[in-house]
Image (cartoon, rainbow, N blue to C red; front, side, top):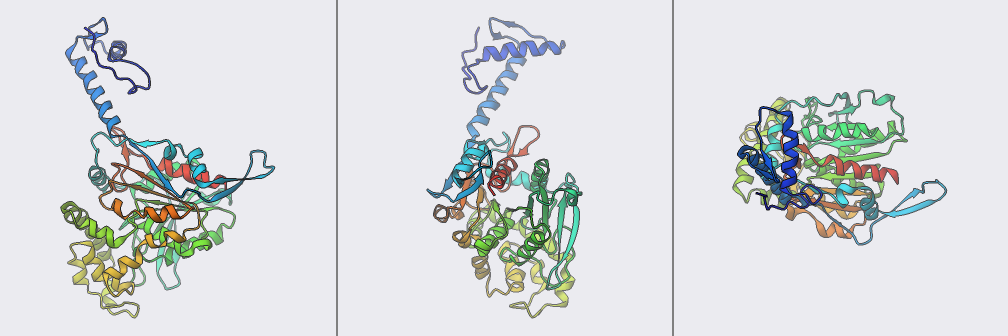
Length: 444
């Protein structure tokens, strides 16, 4: 008998299951231990039929989960100048046109989640689990930097021989997320691909992160952009001919975008990429705590990560509980007893950074309010099923009003997940991000 199942499109042409059976018949010759019978396009061996069924089921489910990338931008985007191919005249290209011509993963692409990670929650949890394993794929050269107030931060450079590369080779300045560092898996998924393109990487480690000790009673926060600004200017001063591109993830995306908006036309960056940005910290925490998973899983886990960082440096805070820069006394016992993010931010963050309340810190630290002032080509990449950076926090109206910004959204990617592939999932986002970087560099 013939199996009357049409799989048009699943294999890229008009094959049917009968052709799949023929392929399996030929392939099975490599394994004489597997008995088969193929007659008139019918698969009569039950085990082989089961394999075909499972393969088709997996393909159908994967295709049904496919998420087309949605691009949102102003009707008329900024015009970028570049020389034509003969370098005889300057041509102008709209940012949106550039993205649609040079970034196929954004303009015509789609995200196909791993079959067994079909939701935003599954992608987010898996991302959290793999982050617990040591990440050694990138060989960095660490530079310790002194800050004007006595603080210490680190820049992890790649490749290790970055000084031997051309001084004009682009530098990607990377900002990690909450309680992270330069060895986060999402950073190490992007760095090797960036190095293949000849870029240099400067992965920042905030105060107290990435194994760094602190020298002053201050860590970092979503509102504090001074350190990033100082490090960016330092990198620019030491590499005056190199174009600089900032890329940030999650809280690092919030810090980066806020800094870019604050600096506006004075930003030393030629482009900015914001990935999984929460945008509005007040609204985001409200949405997060409105669900059981959001509060009892994500908020608790992130708070424990913050407490772990604080605990490594608690002695310095205990010696300076009423430091002149604090807006109120800092108590280690209250910090260590924090259960959720607002508890931690009330006990330490808002006090260390001079805010009168947690609400004021979240309001003043949110990057969304600075989007109207962004004056460089910027890509915002978010997933609408991100359980941490809620879709309702994405400032679509402000994006539509700023010609310098392209917003790209997907579905089912979770929070810095975007895993594709069945057996060995790999993140999807490095490809579209680097396509955007490459496109903008060509016209910078």
